[in-house]
Image 1 (cartoon, rainbow over the protein chains, first blue to last red):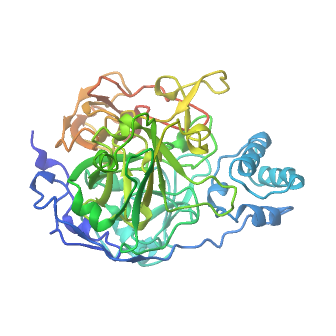
Image 2: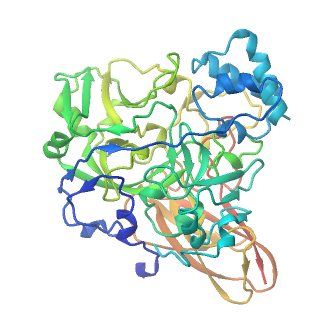
Image 3: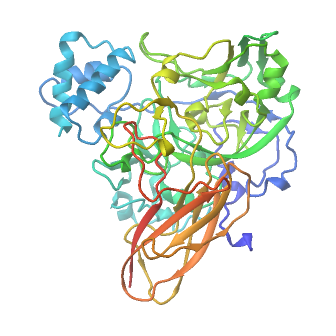
Length: 125
Length: 413
């Protein structure tokens, strides 16, 4: 069979992935590892310093949105919550309780139902 | 990688695209890289609206699932561009938000401790210098890849099919490092930890364990390079565990601590999270209870069409090239079968170069659709152990291990 008919991407695409680090190894073709010249070539380690984006997204306004903003955004941005499928109140409650019991969220006893109700209001079924 | 029309018309920069992976125009992506934010897309399930993020370090345009800690999906058209997934398009999945953003390799050490004769603290130069380098091509796939397609839907990271990637990993054998430390008799498991931690004290640190025999099988490796370059920070710089054939939850990023255990690991991430029903393909019925659960482990085969997408128009009465990728899970790709009539008849595709048991394998074939009208293309991989993708989707409450035969409805015109 003619493997040349399969699409390949150029080594330059790989090189473009560098993030302030460098290898002493020459550019290599990842499509043909058998032709790599120096499997023992040692990387040159360079200090890496990056900025990770922050999210300015808050939960949609509404009753008890402030509770969600205070409690949920401590550990994670809102995106994954807002991208859930519509969940039942029981499913949302299970998520809130999981955040407390499994992940140590500091949601007080008295706020579990309010946060559950809020999440169900914004994306419930 | 060829970028067509890299500038693109200005109007395209705000274009909203609909349908599965319709960001096929690389020109649009090129434009997105210079105008933030530019593009969004609709993944083909409810609440599937996503923005493309271009502001993560070391990353090109990525489907944004969560900013902090980052969940970034590979746009599906990337898988049509080569058998290896470029580092700057490789998906990203972090559990805990305390991720170091400054890593000085001169100060980084990998510890090996626990039930060993000689605890080790290895710096990066010594790791590279003192152990034999090895390379392996292997697919890294999130346990929950494709969760968004589960029906009924389940909570979790709502990925389409892009929480996977294939890279050529280079590093050292875990076995060699463990042998240097000298695993004592009676060792049961080996636990791996990275530099990331939770925000609040009650969050269990993200650690995962492998059985000691698995850890010493000579295939599990500590990678310091990915596709010929140091790992992007978001993919685990400077070291990442590579567990060929197993789901990515075990591939600990920013690996800095290896602990040999005398007893089975009972930490949260092994005993409570990442559990699957102990059934073939982790498949149960919604609502089914009383099924034993086990930690997720080996991957199962999958295959995808990459050059056609849902609702594409194709010419009838003409030879149509169809190509894609497949992987065998914990075994190689045995064969890839394509159907152009909704699964009634199947033809075997030609397989591309074999990069090794655990790699993506490209495939290609051609079809001819005799008459105009809707058609469903289907692709099915059978791995070298004889395991085929199921024609009915598996289901479990965590949204793990989806590997149903993929269907792509097209219109012959």
